[in-house]
Image (cartoon, rainbow, N blue to C red; front, top):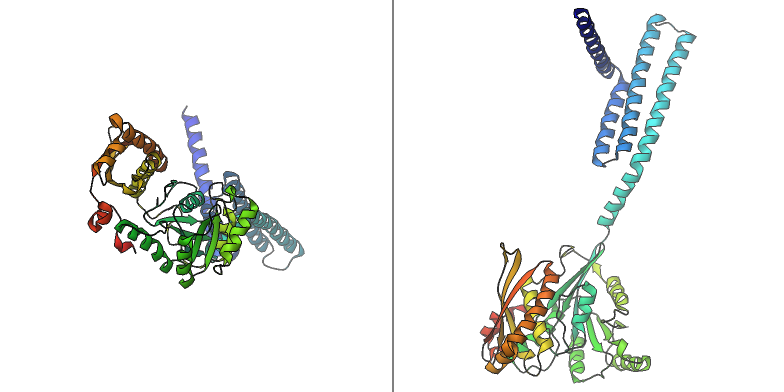
Length: 436
């Protein structure tokens, strides 16, 4: 037993001694041989590049094998040179020269193998990196685009189609949009900030004044104007009023003829000719915002006319309005869909609170629907609260889709007499003169 233990100890000592000699030889070679220092530095750089480019396991295997072979053969080359020089007493000898050349040739072969391996692994990765850098440093374009037009011509439908989701409410009632809604369309090369404005009409209340001035104020803020008109309605006084304003604007105006799915091509051509005679438009683009026809062509035209600029908003941001505003608009949209006569124009929605309930793991929203008269309150509540419940159920589905979360929605109805003509009430409900 003792003799076997002694043998094991001697074996361990031999292994440790061999390892010590090997490490000493490597460090000596690095210290004394210039080529070894070059190979050591190159190996470290290759290892660092492998970490930076996150090479795969098989690529690591080939890199480490290449490094090992180069260093091993360089050490052998140094050892052979020293032995040959010593044996020949540093005198010229053909056999000694041949031995040195063969050793140097072996080093060259493994060096070429290592170089080719490195090129195969790193050139595609370096190319991808350069391509990304070129993409990032390429000229980024951006611009602001206003969508102007009479009420109910499809401005919000167009914006929602471009954004791929609902950010502006839609209804067949006129004057649905009351605030300027920003839709932020971003790609790798450009950012177009659309501003969906309230429909321009002859105002009859302070709210109407706010909506019209809010729409016209965008002419001072944008780089391009989309003047949207319906294909299925003839040019009217409202259109003429807008055209007169646009003639004085110092930005290019593109005529967008919407709802082409509702008319015969001959009627569409007549409509285009009529508007072309009123003003010199930069472009005229017929579209169907509802079906998406020719919308991509309009986006291409806008992209071509963008100038170099900043990316004003993060790539994942689609609107400048907070979630509370979008929630209030979605509730108001359902009121517009489900009520008639004077109710749609007399309604405002205020979100009183919006927070997560930790017990139910739902977003708890409390909102108040404001009306101007008691009779309107009764209509919105409905018999036994049926109408209010229907409004809440429909709105909740849209809100859950937008938030990507479960929602518990509570709604109340309050009367605020003649709020549309009181500036203080307008400000409280989010219609602020400072916006224009």
